[in-house]
Length: 443
Image 1: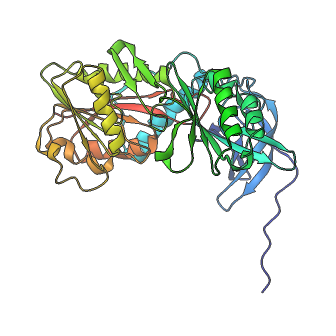
Image 2: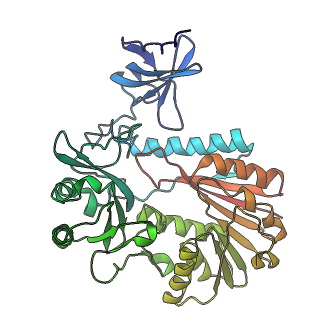
Image 3: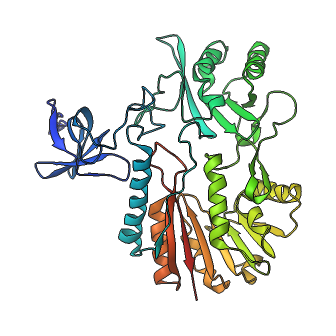
């Protein structure tokens, strides 16, 4: 029997009305009863689109022409906004973006977790929606046919690097250097063996980590050094695994960010996890402290504590905070940060919070309040311990509404907590990423 051929996509544009928006920022329409997700379309618009993919249950397409624009539509600042995977919502007003994310969170809580917050917190923004991104991984590619290098985010849905000269969502110290970075790499002997450049920007220093698959020449290293001096950045190189990241020359950069309202300074290494939006992180920490409202006599537990981003501000206001984190390096730097800030009422443990915790000593203690800041996979495995530890108030900081909603349902329906309030925070403007915060209480 011959191999069946894939059905050809329709080549004629189709005109539709966009009824809603998906969680990943695509317009939703129906064509002959079948759902179509249209990239670049906004709710309320009438558009012409071309099919890009057809599947059994739904189809996909991209906007060819906007016939009737939504009041939410704006002209993207970036000419590559429709191509680059770094942003997907530049064509939508920022206030409409965050309103959509707020509704997506509430929908997920109800649909997945079967819960509704007693209060919807107003969306938290940082003011500017440009130049906010202080952590990023930029792809690098030498294109032999063009004899040139491309540096930037990958194109949406492909492995190709976006051809652009600047990026307005990156920290301006880096966003304005996309073209100069490409010319720098072009000039190196190892131009074909640099797959990526990591960005790590603090309040003062800005580091670029060049991943090198082959040893650089002395001339290459001199060019990197001179580029750093000319542009006010600190070049690092990585010739192996994460442990090989090191400054090109001299002492390590003094990377840090301040939490001024909390009188805290957090130092970090280029490869450490930090929030990408320093301005929003300051406001998020302030909101977290206000919602948990730690009292001088209370003991708090901070799970997935990282560098101490929440631990140290909370410790300024309570009797003691115990931080638990799976990465031993982050735990050590959390201890160092506590010492540098003159904070002596914190203790830290290294533990895999997705593994069995029965032998963990901190599980033998009691706590008044707790904070969870898990990765995208959520915190399901630790929830059962919270009531046993005596936690009456719990603050959950989430980077994915689906797992927050799942865990919220567990906390309410199985562990006796109430969902007091919830809301979103605009950590990643112009993207569909949803950062959120939820407060739970238990009698």
